Length: 330
Image 1: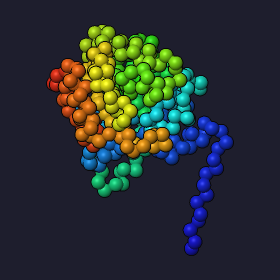
Image 2: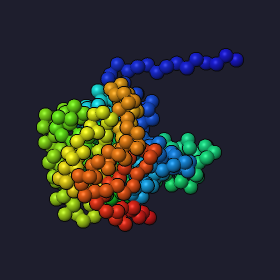
Image 3: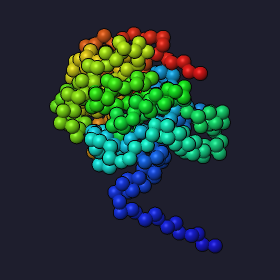
Image 4: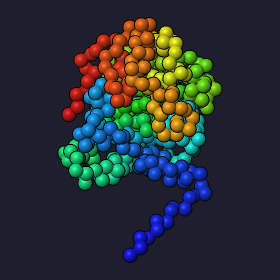
């Protein structure tokens, strides 16, 4: 009997619907009007007992219990190294009707379960981890878009904490007025992609003319937030692009001096997703190159290399290796 031909889905005329269809092909799970979650490759690897991500190695965040999500799918930057389609969701504000934080979290948990359901039939799956993964304990608010553009981010973080879960917020730092009043997440990441304004304009390609000044305000704010909350865990993430921003180690060190974070991650740009249309594979540093550049930064700083993960091409810097950097979870 001849096989039936698979009829391709009709391509929507509406641009937003086309973007949504593309993201669904990339295994995004939509949660409401403007939120989504996506299963991290390391979540799958952890469930199959193959590997763990550097966040588990550095901080104790258990991969199989992590929900990678976003409360909003627009961003005010168009970073050239971003693996997303920056032409699809770039904006300085949210224009759609807003979902409530509780609904976003509930829908993300449901979608997490749905996206992971197929692993139950894989022979190498750790069944206990797989079942536990349906009830995530760690929410990585870092999937796509800039979360500080979601007007109810404060309530979202409070809702996560109310459920006894941890929150890991990644921001580009361009909304200091939001960050200043924010419910302190378990760990706050500020992405810093350039050591000076000239490179910032070239790499981050921000929609905001005063983007660099906004980022500086956020960095200067971090020590103040740490004083207010002794449990605050602030992190700088330096994304290093070979041949572009792998220079001026003294300027990178100055950024550390200004912000006084608990952690600094020096991480390689990865040649994946839509970034391959803007960058070359030669822009992706090898792990030894990241280690070498991190050492250069350390020469101008009080921070030193504490840990690293070769597979992720990332190095962790701290002033000293504190015992509490590996968090304990129930």
